[in-house]
Length: 169
Image 1 (tube, rainbow, N blue to C red):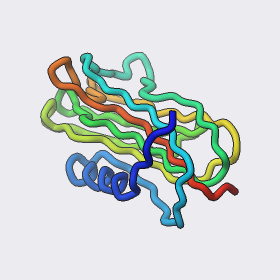
Image 2: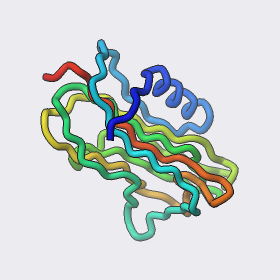
Image 3: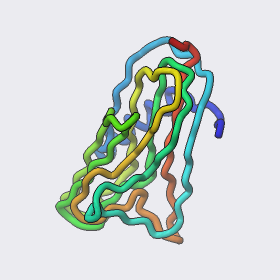
């Protein structure tokens, strides 16, 4: 699905907001001339109660096959409310490209449910021409986590955006 281009300043602002508000972001950005040519996005508006644990192993949050034209790509995961359900817990969310972990973020909580905020995870790099498997996964967690912490009265957003650059190589 092609989506309207997201300005680079918006991605940077989300990453800065996540760092300032909840220490939940790992962002690798290399400044290059940018000419956007295509986008792919998975946007999930979540209203049902959504809590995850890794008791049964890692939990896949997004999985998609991306057909790259070759060149630079920015992959960003955004979650509107990463929230623990108990005190003294932690969660690790990772981004994988073709089965290789390229970025991870750790969120910890001392106090519990109100120790929450937006989550952002981004990777900027080169992909060869062809099909690539993109995966966002809750790799490890102590306790249960809302990703996003939602219920019918409090909806949230979980989004994966892939932005390809126009300069193939």
